[in-house]
Image (cartoon, rainbow, N blue to C red; front, top):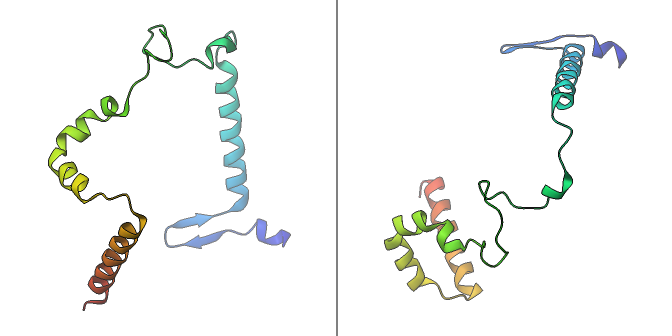
Length: 115
């Protein structure tokens, strides 16, 4: 078992030696620790729980809430025709969704089987 740690596995794409990778991961860990230690340590934790609003102060939770309609406006506006059709098909009944799922699954299986 210990002997296999020092063996090199040669493949068509290169080689793999566990000791080399352990040393490489150790070097990456040391570099990561150095970068982490170089960061500023005088930040306050009071800002940790506040949302980042591009440097603007938070007015209140109610007034700074961004609705989903505003957040995805470009996507919804660009696919308006698709959403109009999909809203007409939407029933909210789980049985309808299961039937659609099974129909699409059967079609995909027929395509893959070449029938």
